[in-house]
Length: 151
Length: 431
Image (tube, rainbow over all chains, first blue to last red; front, side):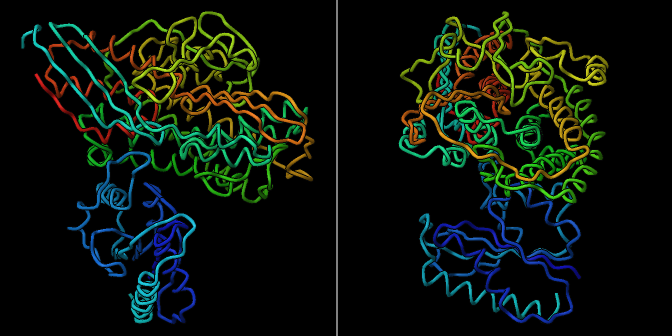
């Protein structure tokens, strides 16, 4: 199985959450049976769909703001996508817009896991807050366990 | 529906190049009483931010102006400064700048056609709906867009706000192995681009011939992208430095973007203006293809802009392939620059049209003053004129939703940044 784990983020404060999960996973000893690719992306837009090619499973991790407590980890199902869709513009083509487009194009991977880490602020140049850093480690542990057991 | 009705259509959130705008339309007694494309985004002050900056910072700084066409800003700035500093960047860097630029045209045009403009012509509200009825065409568009992004990444390290260009050339040299791998993919994409031209040519477009002046760069040999003089369809042909003598900018109270005019009139910049002025610079077989699909140039129908973008994707692929043939890495991808005081002026053809830069540089190489005229500002008055003419041609007796959609279609033809904004529109109608 080919598994691609993608962290989406930016260098701005808590918005680094997705990237930091990838960094944290890279430090974990993962000895599962799957071929694993780790990748960090910044606003991939519709280009996210390209990254699904050839993958049996894709795990997406992004920061999110839903009003929940910063540091909460959400596992988002397909029924959640519509609530987070944007305006389908060149500047606002978000992760869930890309997933909806991939679905219409029958380009979704056989298995897709979408995780969101609730964040508080995304100040340019700031470090992520303690709640988000803690969530990054928890989610990295959870994903490492998943990957060690085989997808 | 009576033609004497009074209609007010307000489109209050119509963002533009990374900004915000709106459309106000008032129809009284069957006539357009007011039509305003309001650009209300606060000024971004990029020109002011540049003051006091070292010339070497300028290419990276101006790349931040636009996430879709950063290469245009970088190359225009670098070339303006190189002209002032009397630097010859050499044949390798000149050719690779054009290749880099081709990548931006391919990605920007592909994005605009498939994700923004085409859904209008299939009765779809967005690209996802279009993907359900034309999946192969949307997949093809995404492949072309990705290929354009890869060309940009090749020279700029990343496709959004790339960092490859420097005054004097490039910071780094792509390896021949990477070039070779990409050339194969560019060649494989040629039939896809040709199919895209046929697809866009087959769309049912509103007949809407208008009389306007096209303004675009023109080169003695090539289809002008990054080099050439400024031409207009009335015969004007000037160097970049003479731009302010012929083109004026004015402020209108309803917009934070300046309105441009030429001889007191709006004018068109962008892919259709380029094709209108440079048809004879297209390769023979591309001209044959245009004749085959019935694309007669010059065209006064701005709805042909989407087809023009498809043609330019095909052209950009061919240019990139031509310039990357027999690729050899140079000893150095840049030449050293020595600043000199003076005025640096330059222009290139951004995906959305003519982009003009002017910098006053002091003896220490610091920017004293900067002026940047982007294509969106130049097209703003033309969009208003087009909306008025196009609505009258379309018929004011249509239902409000149809009028609004027609206005959005017109706006989307000009600029992917405005196009993206129009997808956010909320419409208030009062009678």
